Length: 152
Image (cartoon, rainbow, N blue to C red):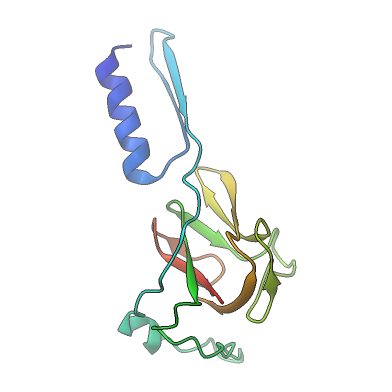
């Protein structure tokens, strides 16, 4: 396997937020690349997209009322998706979510899981605080850098 193919695989991993790739060729040659996922970095919250405000809760469901989190509040940080994948709020179907609005969290606590390439990747809190908003729904496909939840 030549270095050009390996470089292409590394570029593919970076573009799509992948942490592991294995390529096998017909002649038995194989290469496996693995990297550590990027740490979750808390940053200032972004303004919500108008489409997100237009979503109505499902019939019979009551939408959680987010705590007032001013967009300009420097104490509120956005926990961003470290990769592309499916957001899961709970460790398994039917289980209680890791956190919900009002949950007190400590640095290192698991906030959610993102499934990418059949791997479950825990997203952990970078600091102590309280969850003031969960910005995505369980089972949503999230892009790299999307705000998953806000912590004050």
